[in-house]
Length: 249
Image 1 (cartoon, rainbow, N blue to C red):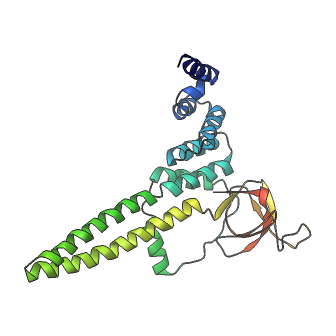
Image 2 (image 1 turned 90 degrees about the vertical axis):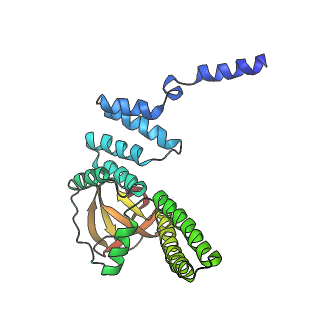
Image 3 (image 1 turned 45 degrees about the vertical axis):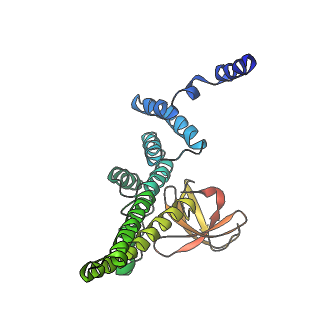
């Protein structure tokens, strides 16, 4: 027992002081004190431990923005928005950072139904949609009980109608939660991190040069071949660039 305690004490004494305290609080304090470079290192350290939260990405994005690293700021604001799509502060700071991006594209118009569906789905996070789905499923069971066990025809009709309605909403909110979870786990979009990059018509250095993109531009990765990535822009144009020119959101 004594040896075990000595071993634990030795581990604690060998651990850096800042790792023994709350690293997130340490990073926040560095940011408040204007020590942005140190705050960036501290937030990155937290993320390296596989701890993810919109607040961490948001604060990290702010720290990068304060140091003039726009592409990294946009990258982390986008990541924060994945976890908290309805956060107005994240949306505002992301739009502010995007104003520094040189590349401007017209977004291809979406059909009304798809735009309406996406707008509703992006109103809440995956966790909130999951909670809604569970709550609506419980309501489905309650209304189903009215239909199955009530002796009054009015209550049976009431239970059947609302059980059917609640179950439909359960499936809808579950699909929202599933799609939002996929967005977090299966990242399709990326941010260009190189100052400028020439987009090629094929995954080859000698490929036809199509157009030039600059850091901070958001692209969708639709394919890959070895160290090359096939990207799609919001205006419908596509091409190839090297893997090291982008970082996945």
